[in-house]
Amino acid sequence: MRLLSGDLSPYSAKIRMQIYAMDIADDFVFDLPLAEFVTGRLKDISPLGRIPILETEHGAIPESEVIAEYIDEMYPERSMLGQTPIERANVRVISRIGDTYLLNNIFLCLGQLATPDRNQGVIDLLMGQLLRGAVALEEHLASQGYATGGEVLTRADCSLVPALYMCDRTVPRLGVANPIVGHPKTEAYWARIQENEHAARIIVEMDRGLKARLDGTEQQRVQEAMEAAAALTKR
Ligand SMILES: N[C@@H](CCC(=O)N[C@@H](CS)C(=O)NCC(=O)O)C(=O)O
Image (cartoon, rainbow, N blue to C red; front, side, top):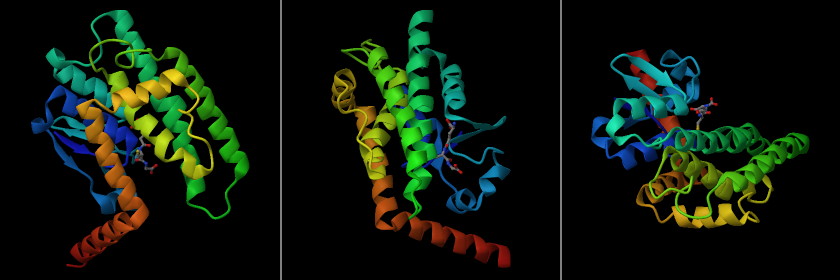
């Protein structure tokens, strides 16, 4: 299977963490067709035009949560969803908080980083919603162990690590306080989970992506990929 994924993309990092934790990385090729991504031609592979996308022999699957479910179903003996119906419900709730109530608000706000005329109303609205999500997460998170309180890493952790990374590293760039800070259970969890080898691995990858974005390397790679694509079409 081929996973279209980017270092800094949190929704992609979530799937990579799951794959690493399930010890099935040998069954995947990790790739990002840069030129297609920035020119919108990713839509030829998936109409949503967003990563991650999982290419399987039966077709392409978009949406990180759908991909996560698919991988779990493909390797049922290694499933990371929990053992009982209530455990699985808790994993899904925390995963949804990470994806929808944290990450989605951050993503909608990211455009404000790219413009010199920031719209403070947009930032206030979305970051208010982010804080509301962070308050809810604080209630749902376990005080000990992994995200749902168990002794085993689950997909809740795979969703939360990239979401908390964005809270920690990206939100302050919008002039807004890191919403992890001031929430004791979330602060403790964030410190604890970084000790996990699979979490640590995707944090290194996301840091690499952030560095490339900030130092211009990413932009340079995009340029090179677009030139290579243009040269191919001229032939
Ligand atoms: N709901 C989607 C969100 C995916 C998403 O927004 N991916 C970002 C990168 S992390 C993307 O591809 N953005 C490109 C764009 O918005 O055009 C999921 O869970 O996979």
